[in-house]
Image (cartoon, rainbow, N blue to C red; front, top):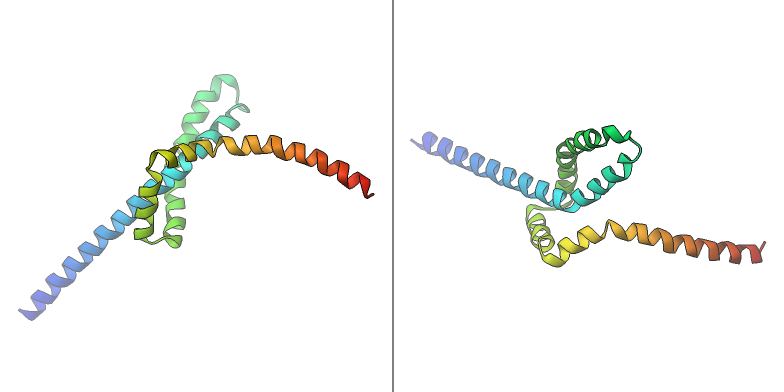
Length: 132
C-alpha cells in the first residue's frame, strides 16, 4: 500500500512538473514572439527587395514559415536567462499599450538613428582633420 501511495505521489508530481515546464515553455515562446516578431518582419521586408519582384510574396511566406523554429530556439536562450516568474512579469509588462507601441517603434528608431549618426560622423571627420 505504501508503495502504491509512493508511486501515485511520484506520478502526480511528475505530471505537475511536466505541466509547469510546458507552461513555462509556452509563456517564454509567447514572450519571444512578442519581442521579436516586428523586428523579424522588418528584416523580411528589408531583404525582400533583393528578390525578383515576381518571387517576393513566395520569399516572404517561406522566410516567415521559419519563424516558429527561430522562436523555439530563442525560447531556449530566454529560459536560460529568465525564470518562469520573470517571464510572466515580462509578458505582463509587454502587453501594455505603451510597451506594444514601444516594441513597434523600436524598429524605426535605428533608421532614424542612422541619419543622426551619419551627421555626427561628418562632424567627427572635420574634428579629426583638425588634428591630423
